[in-house]
Length: 272
Ligand SMILES: Nc1ncnc2c1ncn2[C@@H]1O[C@H](COP(=O)(O)OP(=O)(O)OP(=O)(O)O)[C@@H](O)[C@H]1O
Image (cartoon, rainbow, N blue to C red; front, top):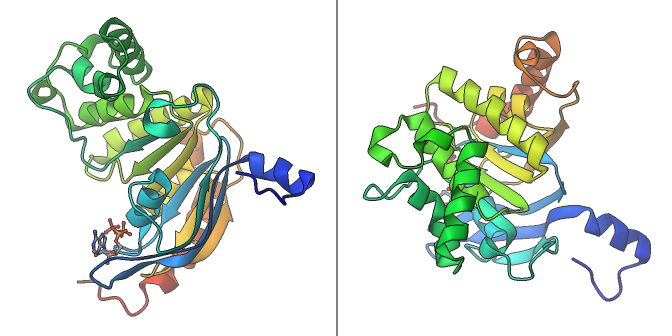
């Protein structure tokens, strides 16, 4: 994260950052200007949400951070990985909207996949997969097949697969969007508990104002495409959060503030 000319003070603040995007733009080959210029700094251990209208470039921003796609201009920087120099997955875990599990093999083997691809010996991989499954409440389902699981359980498996490499940063792209509300609330609570216990940096993409306020320490509201920062709202409340936060006046106030910040991003957009 450091430049040769960076001062010690700036260096100290940079090392506390997990991710930094400066003046980042992304134009796709078909000419679509998807993002930017976009600036974002995420501190280590922070939980932030990216919120914005459909097509504003949220997934694009995650893909740039993950290194799955290159920026057209600007800089994307990640913190140095702590631990093994060549960490599997480069210190990043990605959870997509679809669980994308292999239907022909067990839950354990699905979770073990990144370790298998990374050359981790089978016995160690199985033990780590079982530990990751236990962390998402699925210890008893390691031998099950994906078809035997509910939508929420499949998403837990997907989360376990992202955690199994012990990433520093967890990128989540609308992971709970397809789930019913009760399942979503449960997963929200379990994700917060995991975040508190594991201390990962989480960047969470959602369309939901309510979900973003419930989960995040900061809600980053994006403009319509090409996505830029419209507002960056810190959610301050007593931790740990739970159902009493969801029904509190403070929660409603934050939801109103975030909705108001989001409204201009929808102006001129057809609701059809
Ligand atoms: N590979 C690609 N090639 C061309 N255009 C793309 C590509 N991927 C995304 N786009 C376009 O870039 C814009 C931003 O897409 P992106 O998926 O990042 O938005 P999003 O905010 O995540 O949308 P949603 O909330 O609907 O998932 C859209 O107009 C999309 O059509």
